[in-house]
Length: 630
Image 1 (cartoon, rainbow, N blue to C red):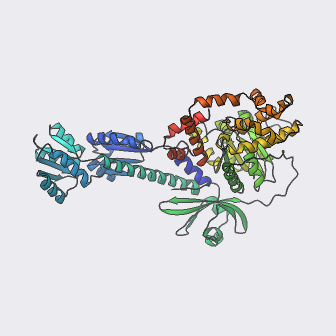
Image 2: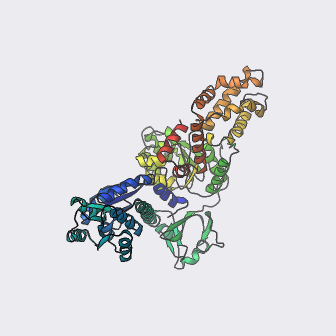
Image 3: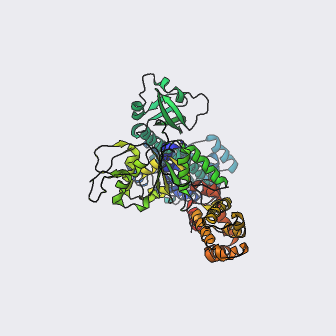
């Protein structure tokens, strides 16, 4: 199952491909030699899944239920009669280690070196193969076939092998031979184990995706309060949730009502757009869901409010984004696409990268530009004041409340953008209150008895990985899904060095004007360019801005621009201290960190893709990133 974007994508990505995804789990039931052989191959696959081996012969479902309940596997691997029983008793994918003719030939060849009389007990029989081996190796092979462990034991006892014989078979058969002090040779091979584990990982992933798909369908069609339509691409069958049935006022011939979505005028379906259903205007967002071999188009619909006429508001100063890099160009393309939709946006990135500038660009470029841009730093609001600050309160709502009440930030952002910075710092009870607002899109000021609908676009920002906080229990999973409809990752300055000059010239022009110094920004930049380009900027754009202002403010003490490097070392010694440290790190290590930084930019911060691309584990990648980020 692959979900592109939107609320459906937020759920699926969180469960399947977040920066800390739950690893696939494979439970292996075997016996002695089989378990030992599997144990030698498993280390080759530990980057892709977790494994647990249970050394046992399965006799009843009750024997394995406790292992399944404890480990909660996505797939099970076994062999022989064990696998046959498990397949009949479980709904989980069960992979059986198959024995090839090559495996049997190799095992018999090994056995023929110690005995000319061989007992082969297996779940399959090939007279032609046995005859060929007897003739080519000049040996005698007694071949017996079984379907259950009990039959295998009975056949072994009836055959009465002696110490002069050699036994070939599965681990159960070899175990009985060992107990009788008879030489035995297991017919499983490492290659067959590898092939089985490959298939087990693939089946485990499909099984987990199917489970998530059913949960996703349940959320879309039964729980979401957003009008949602699901269209089967092959049959054109349309499913819709209760919100869609109510708000779209669909008649019996709803196929005609939804003609524009069900049968677009071109084969290409646009991701975000506008439509008219039963005479009412709607925004829509499209997700593509692949499930059970079928493609489904999932439309989320949002009521398109009448165009809002510009109203005189006190706007903040114009904020500009200076850049040259392809990374920011790509990011701004995302801004352009995402700002047209009323859906929530989550902006991630380190402190000082300019997340608020991106939020302001979303406000400026979208349909909510005529309302206000209202920003709130979530880390600065005490828990007991959060609700009143966000939703406001009526006169006398609580002791100490302001006379006449107070309009909350949500109401101030009506028809505009509400920007919640450092969203990761919200306490859990604050998160619950914000989640309710996002679900209902209504507010009730403290002291009020009625709720009021609110139309706005919400943009949140975090300098911490929310997916990690969800895993640790510090951030609500349901709130994360609500916020992460669209995601924009702002790369740190060290990953886009092309932007240093653009930002520096922009800031130098401003500061030179503020301090009334008659210099060309480029003339100031050139003498210090090399130092700025070799610094890693742990504080990002904010740090660059602060250092440049310090420099400009101190320029009254010099007579020549050639003295700027010395002045820079005086006002910002950290730039030069890091240069010394970098040299001692070694060229190879530095190049490795550069490769990691480039890959993070290439894959938009997706740690799983970066680890796969670089051929390292996610744990190793985490250590490298920690070094980059100090």
